[in-house]
Length: 72
Length: 262
Image (cartoon, rainbow over all chains, first blue to last red; front, side, top):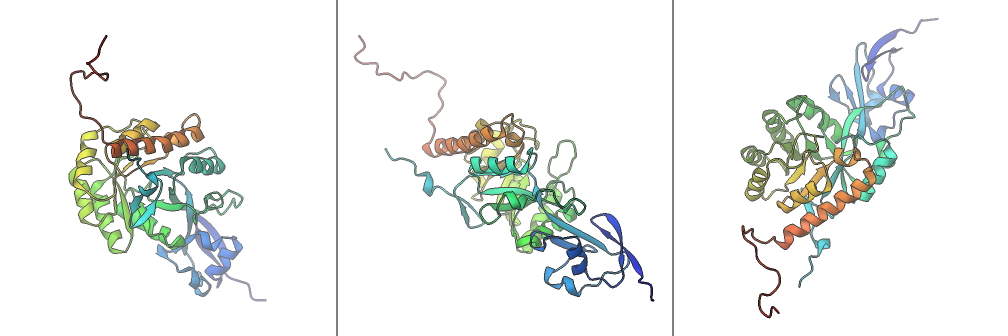
């Protein structure tokens, strides 16, 4: 059986090892992110939430998932 | 005597009308539920919010949107904590992406100790954001010249500080605020540094269009009581401004008639 290759990515500042060829959409689903309440950045570029199923993650990708919290 | 009809007296920012002239921050509260109650008591229709990372390891943490409905209360994304134009632009572009927010509050700080705004970075950011279609309410110092420059590059509201953020000192330079008031038709909203409800009244009596308060309410001994006090303080100050105060004299003027004295 072919061994699945892992890649290293960073999500909100934390390193994570994931299977190769996963999409951004799969990762966000795994993390149970409420898409309507967040914005997503991939390698400093804002991502259109309608296109996340088409984006395959690569080694060293940096994902930022942000939302609104209390502030002044 | 004509009674001031406050229902017709609206705060208008970027062509949007609001009944309340008080904007409140949503930070520093003990809990989300306390924050939501304070907003309700304050009567505020606009609240400032911060953009931060989602906590991916603890999903049970309560979300602001579950307590404060953005369909009922206008969220005003704020760039608090940003020290460069780049950081502020990144933050507000992300904020817009969350749900199409175009009305934003720009705050670019220049010093960690006094939290004064870096006006060079602020001016630069205001210009870029305006060109990108944002409606930018700008936190600034109480400098009339800088306020004018912000207006010239497209700010939709001028938000000078009363005193350093969270200091509770109240308005330190009434003269400058008055000068800014006289030079601009843009909404003028006092942002930062207020300590108690009477500070809000003073701001409104100077002719400001609104007041923003966070720490003064959230960190009061009784935040809910203070939220109500600020609501009343803003209303009292606005009514007093509209009523037109008497001139000041250095001598006394008797209130009772001097004729018919027994």
